[in-house]
Amino acid sequence: MKRLILCIICLQFGISKAQESTQYLFDGELNISGFGGVIGEISLIKDRTIYSVGGGGGMLINQKAFIGGYGMGNVVDNQLFRYNGSAVGLEMGHGGLWFGYNFLPKKVVHFGLCARTGWGGIGVVDKNGNGILNDGIFVLTPQADLAVNVLPFMKVNMSIGYRAVTGANNPFITNAELSSPTGLIGFYFGWFGE
Image: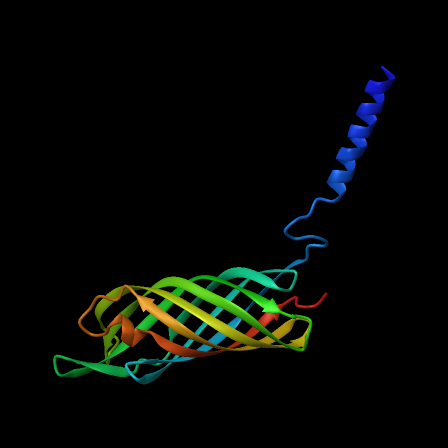
């Protein structure tokens, strides 16, 4: 009987020691905060400069990883095509998931990688804003970020990336003409401190 009790005590001690050494994906203190802000983007469509504006935000985990959402739309309806003898413009909008990782986020200036992936559409419009065509698209934009911690609640990001577009099926513009290198600036507000 004494041996059985001794075995149970040893087994219990071994189990409690094993539980103390368990490791987790987020080991230590888990710090969750959030952020959101305004995004401005410059890109090319049919070799013409296009300006887009939007916003995004998400959940920030230990000031490093984040996941959230975004939305973008162009703000300049450049007359890119001819339709029935008249100039027509292009409207493009998309939104979806946004995720990434910040390296050394406590440094004043630091780097990160992220990607935006979403769905949206393009519309060809005449000079009066009347719609001629609508088409659905899928967009994937990986990018590299240079971030500056301005204040504990404000960050400015400058990014370069590439917008890859698929799904366009119309006589005006191709996926390749919608795909483009991008430059982006973002002003984000949230909690970026300890």
